[in-house]
Length: 55
Image 1 (cartoon, rainbow, N blue to C red):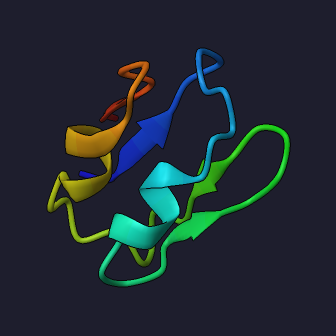
Image 2 (spheres, one colour):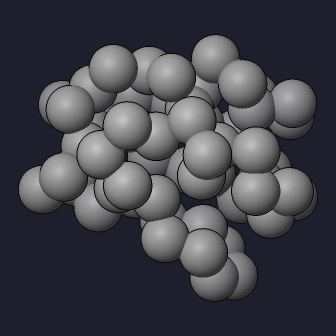
Image 3 (cartoon, rainbow, N blue to C red):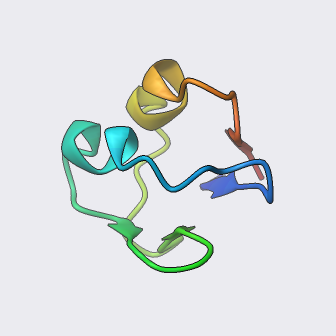
């Protein structure tokens, strides 16, 4: 199960550096590639606005 980024995302970029498989794509909104996501949760742990959740 991949993680998803909700509309609460402020596009701060904190999650991008934490993703070990580079599954997060910048944009408006940021997105997580479900084919690359390993469900590690590292991005969700560092999100300051809690905008990243399991799908």
